[in-house]
Amino acid sequence: VDLVRSHSAVEVMRFPNKEHGFMVEVVKSLAEDDPLMPALPAGYSRMDVLAYNLWLPTTTRDGRDACVMVQVSRVDVGVPIPSWAVKPIGKRVAPGIVSSFRECASYALPGNGHPRFTEKRREDRDGLYAELDEIQRIGRDRLPALVGGQRITPVVLPPDRIVDLPGICKSWGTGTGTGGSSDSLVGGKAR
Image 1 (tube, one colour):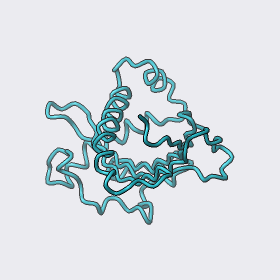
Image 2 (cartoon, one colour):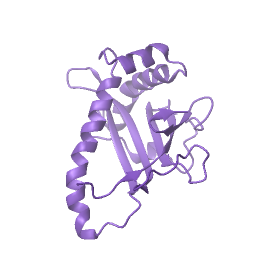
Image 3 (tube, helix red, strand yellow):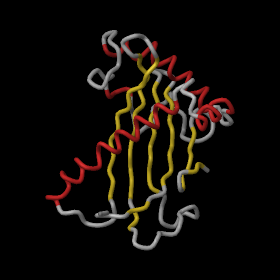
Image 4 (cartoon, one colour):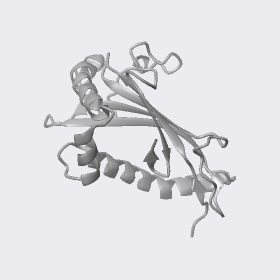
């Protein structure tokens, strides 16, 4: 039984930091008056999303490239949810979200054979994959120095001073044009 049926269309802004080797994504809902905002399906409420994803290159214990993602997000499903229901709903929904992230991340790994990402990586129309590979190399070499030479893990993270969101750190791109990218995702397709 669906408790809440909600719909969202989001814009994804990416800010690579080549000084330290990481990337920040800002994912936010499109405004209601945005021309790309699709009509709300019958029986659905509009979901408002604001998420910050910090992508930190690292390596596995055996030296393979890997990545740690730290996410802070706020989601408003568009209808009131009683406080007593938040925890049970979270316990039911969170595992699926984490599983989906892991599955999608595995698709994007070089050489995994998933046709969609293998083709996108090969084409690399916008240079995104080349830029991500560069950030991976930089982060793999530079981020450990910020944590006493340790490998970046979910419990060993660099100091938050490397992320200057209010000023969009001087070494970052602007979110558009050179050094950054911005995609609007509507119905799963990038614009």
